[in-house]
Image (cartoon, rainbow, N blue to C red; front, side, top):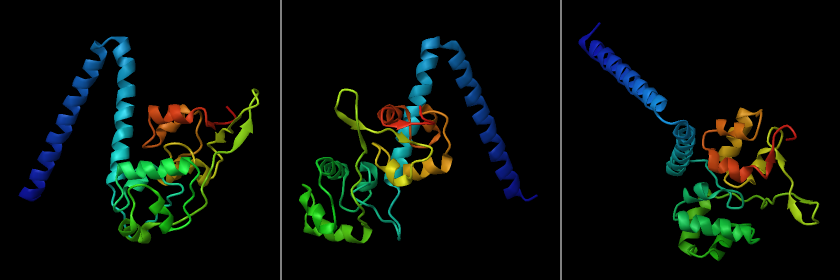
Length: 208
């Protein structure tokens, strides 16, 4: 074994030892905390994981072949487009919520903050599908409300329609199906407690 190999093995051993020490200290810290604190910590860790996944997705640059549909993409996906920051991405989603449908790149100029030069930058990265809308049903009170989507069987285009679920998360949901409950969706990287609460009235699992 060469000196370089020996050095790499030594570094790996030190790393494993450090991880073991940190984990042991963390477990001891948890045991010393009150039950209430132990209940809160997993939620905080899940929220941090969700935030980390969102940041990772936002920082992923567009590559050749990537296309984003402004009629369906969430704020994080839209923010990846050239010349589109979080404020303009939110404005696109707000315009959609008000009934605007984008049929071509030029339609995006209707959104405040997007001018002709930005439209030209966006053209190579866009695709346009029909604007999705949540299915509606009559409630007992006679008002319209969303029909819950069955997570285990819904196609990706219906999952994309859900708040906080863009194309990437919809694909992950399909890949990890089936789920046993709405809370089980936290198995999907990028979905944490906050997203679960937004989804809860809009989805069901196994008819529940």
